[in-house]
Image 1 (cartoon, rainbow, N blue to C red):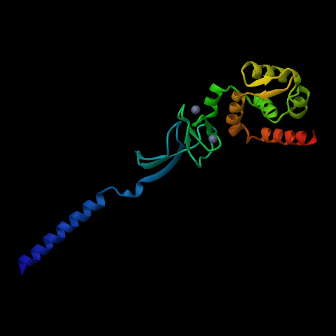
Image 2: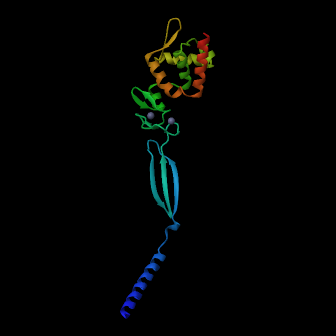
Image 3: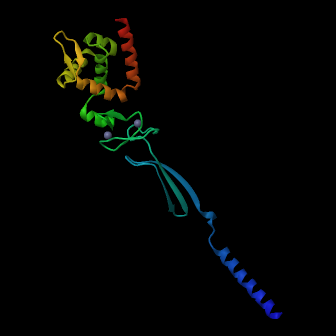
Length: 200
Ligand SMILES: [Zn+2]
Ligand SMILES: [Zn+2]
């Protein structure tokens, strides 16, 4: 009997010791969890990283944004030339590849102002006075742009002064219109062109 009691007491002592040790262990209550959100760097994809900083567990989420306009991406494309992540508004279909506007400009150095002139010529508005009336671009500036377009092979001018886009000009027009076409100033110009053409 005595030995049984002894054994029980001994066991209780062990249990007490264990409990003591458990109580002495640091508790997990002090760990602070923190969540940080960062924008993934250029060419980087979504990622999630868990790290420990002092007493905190930090979860860093990197979200994919468009490297061009920094907007949200619904449909991701990568620029074939520079690897930038592009949203659907910034992806340009060019010669069967997806590229960004910056890389398109390497091939076709067309500014917004130059694009406006191309847009008018594509719609058959080719007289300098007409183009000035529709777009408001000063005539001397327009003359410079038209000279540039002709010298670069985007536009041909007939003997009588009529202008039309060459194949190169048409290619530049379609490529640039994928990005520039949706901008407010271009939509505005589109409206004025439509109005002008319907009046003529
Ligand atoms: Zn974008
Ligand atoms: Zn690019």
